[in-house]
Every structure is written in C-alpha cells, then in structure tokens.
Amino acid sequence: MRADRHRRTLAAGEILFREGDQGHEAYVVESGCIEIYTGDAASRRRVARLGRDELFGEMTLVGSQTRVASALALETTTVTVVSHDYLEERLESADPLLRHLLRVAIIRGRDSMQRLGELNGAASAPAPVADPDGSADQRAALQRLRLEQAMETALERQEFRLYLQPIVHLHDGSPAGFETLIRWIRADGSQVSPGEFIPVAEQSEFINILGHWIIRDACRLMAALDQAAPGREPFLSLNLSFRQFRDPELFPVLEAAMREHRVVPQRLRLEITESMIAHDMQAAKELLGRCKALGAKLSVDDFGTGYSSLSYLQHFPMDSLKLDRSFIGEIGSSPAAAKIVGAVARLAADLGMQTVAEGIETAEQAARCRELGIDYGQGFHWARALPEADAIGYLRRGGVA
Ligand code: C2E
Ligand code: CA
Ligand code: CA
Image (cartoon, rainbow, N blue to C red; front, side):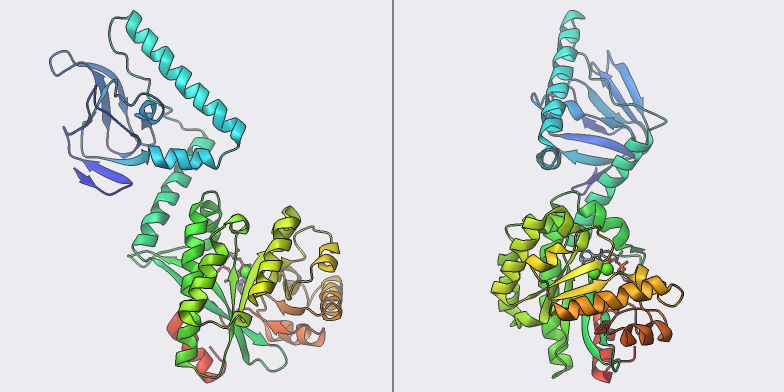
C-alpha cells in the first residue's frame, strides 16, 4: 500500500481494514472500487460496493473505534483519508449548535446500528454513505476537502510563492512599493488561482498557517530586495484574511520575522478589506492599534465595495485607502466613477491618508487618476505580479517591467 498522509493507493485484493480492527479514519473513494463486507473469508457477506466520491468508515471517527466491517479493494483503488484530527478541527470551527447536533446524530446512528446488529445476532456494518448521483452540496464539500488537503501538501512541498506587483508613484511612475500576491505553482507548472484556494483556506485554520508563511516570506523578500537593489527601499503590502484578525500568533510571528530580517516596520503595510472592517469594527480597531504600536501601516483594500459606513474613518483613520478596480475600470466612461474617485482622493487627503488606485490598465486611466489627486497606482499598465527575480530587476531599473 502506497501512503501519504491524505491519500492511499491500494492494490487489487488489498484489505484496507478488517472487522474488529481499531480505526481512527474515514475514507472517500477517489478511483477504483471498494467492497465492504462482514464475516471472514469463508462466510463473507457483502454489505456494499463503493465507487468514486463515496464515503465509508466514518463510524470510527466518533466514540467506539472498532471496525464493524472489513474493506477490500476490488481493483487498484485510491482513497482520500479523513482523519479523526481533521474532523475534530473542522468541528471545532463549526457553529457550536451544528457541532452538537452532528455529534449526537452520529453517536445515535452508531448505537442504533449496534442494537440492530445485536438483534440480528451478528455484527452489523454501518451503512456507507452511498449517493451515486451526489448532490451539488456533497460534491462541493468533497472538492473543498481535496483542495484543503492538497494545500497542506503544497505548503510542505514549497509550491507556494509570493509574487510582487509594483505600486508606483502616480506623479512620475517610479516604483514606490509592491503588493505581495500569493501564487500556487504545482510541480507540473500548472497554477491554482488565489481566487480559488484562498476562500477555501479561509474556511479553516489553515489560513493562519499559510498567513504565517506569507508574513515570514514577505520579510525575507524585503531583505532580499534591499540587498539586490540598495537604496530603493520599497514598501511591501501584505493581504490579511478575516480569520487572521483573531489569530493570537499574528503579531508574535510578524515581530519575530521582522526581527530576523531586520525589517523597518514603516515599510510594511497590512491590507484588510473594507468588508472585513464592516463585519468586525472592533477587531479592525484593535488591529490598527497594534499596527500603530509596532510602527507598521494599515491599508483599506477594495475601498468602495464593502457597504460600510464611512464613519469608521473618523474613529480610526487608516494609513491608506486602495480604491477598488471597479471604479478605475469605469473612470474613462462614467462621470460618476470619476467624481467618486476625486471625492475619495480629497477625503483621504483631508484625513491624512494616502490613496492607491488598483487595476489601472491603460495610460489614460493612470493620467485620470493622477489628475484626480490619487497618490499611487497599481495595475497591468505597469506590471503584473512578478516573481522575485523579475521584481528585483524591475526595482534596479527604477521601473519598467
Ligand atoms: P486583491 O487583494 O484585491 O489583489 C488584487 C488582484 O487584482 C490580484 O489578483 C491582482 O493580480 C489583480 N490585478 C492587479 N492589477 C490588475 C489589473 O490591472 N487588472 C486586473 N483585471 N486585475 C489586476 P490575484 O493575485 O489573482 O489575487 C486575487 C485575490 O486573492 C486578492 O485580491 C486577495 O484577495 C487574494 N490574495 C492574493 N494573495 C493573497 C495573500 O497572500 N493572502 C491573502 N490573504 N489573500 C491573497
Ligand atoms: Ca490586496
Ligand atoms: Ca484589492
């Protein structure tokens, strides 16, 4: 049997577990075919035959961990492993009421199986969850499970990279800083978009682990940029996820990484979206306080899309606002968009905040943002997110990707 932590491949005829074994894992069939049976070789009684996406062995995840049936691969078969620890972690982050209901339902299900088995005078196997059509919800849940496990493996295999997208001074186009944007590049060169995996990472504690890696790598990058292009001193903007608001390790990790790489705090900016602020004002306020104490900057990302009341700016002025690219895209065609951008630039200046326009794709958009008083620009007009070596080249040349 070939094994990694999340997947196992079984040869035809191989037994995954036997009735009476101790077990702490459930499985999802990825490919091939599993037979669930009770009894021994002589008196074997088939309970179910399972194909792709079917879940089995789940009863051992709660309470009694003794297998009540055996599982055998009928052909070469790959299964995804759902460990007890994984389930516990997911349950911990679930709504407490749902968590309780789920535990009760599983335990009752197992007890009634056992009683049925006793009545029949034989150990009965739990019914595998077999839904050949698979509801859309179920398919989405399985896909999420696979992606979560693949991300953990990707982190171990160092498949994540932080790319750097230049942010320029709008008045002359010279480099001012970079936004770090994560990339997942698989061994075969294919990429998974952050728009796909970040939302999945955000549903579990994994975003905090990934977030720590991002912080450490950004600090390492800052030192690498300074060494390769001395004197330029760009700032780096890091994206934070809503869960990281509540991560007690966030600042300890940040401070340790900054110390290790001798990062000047004023050159680090944390980006939080306006909807994160709207959702949890208190956490945003605390974060701003901690950034101020450290000397780092805080920036409002996707400004103008969060449906938040602007009054938060009065109570806790941020260091900068990043205007969402939806306004920039329309700045040439919609007088209203241009008016909004101009008004935000004035408001920010009055409150002592800097402004960044995101998603600038043309020279006209850059010129318009400059006229309207925006400080910095970011977008494909100058450069996409660049790998480290290209960002260094860009910085050395003083711009021009
Ligand atoms: P975001 O923070 O709003 O990042 C800006 C996104 O706009 C990036 O997409 C960037 O490549 C894209 N972009 C930049 N300039 C242009 C342009 O001129 N035109 C257009 N059409 N797009 C432009 P990306 O890298 O795919 O990231 C998507 C989102 O994923 C980010 O949105 C952010 O929410 C999240 N993300 C990316 N990296 C990280 C990270 O390291 N940590 C966290 N927590 N989230 C990240
Ligand atoms: Ca951002
Ligand atoms: Ca943004």
